Image (cartoon, rainbow, N blue to C red):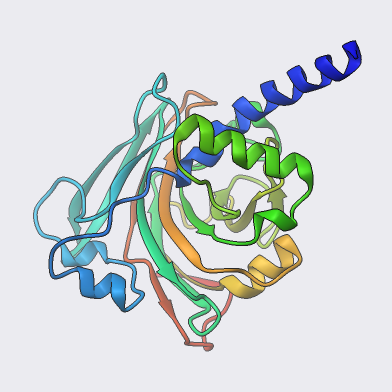
Length: 269
């Protein structure tokens, strides 16, 4: 009996750490009450470029990872005549998130632009103590949680009880890595329900805009071994809380399309 109790104690300690990460996708925006509701109904991700002025983009909400950590600063800026999202992290970690409800199968290609001021020099996405990235795109997916191993079901239920919100069935991130090769899939050290795909790596092209188109259905299947359910959340995250470094990133519009001409490629603009 003692061994069982000890095992449960250890599991719950691990769950507490995992919930910090999974809570990234539980602070989603409420459905908008303006004309932008049509965008949600049509299954679109609201673009940064549709906004004017500074501050946060409409219907993108702060994504708090841990209230004891410093927050990454986000605001809209003009860049080459377009409105983009600027992020600055000084030993900080928080993101922005938008709630969606999209079937990814017919619109499987996710496109976006980003640029960074520099790498997080001491980051290592295989090490939980150094797991930072200058730029991330985060996707949360729905699914049948009852089909998962019992330990995962306990984790999800604990998360719901602690946060009052359901966490995604699976989370797929696209990151700018430091050394890992492009297309490397990294399992988060706290949960196998979170996978990171290296979309860009190294210092080449730092300071330049990079454009991407990724087949998120193919990437999801490669990462999780099954087809994805509905896409329920989209987010961005620039974080340096583990390394204590300073980095900046700029994000252009994030779009879902059926375009198959540009798949899993990056182009320096």
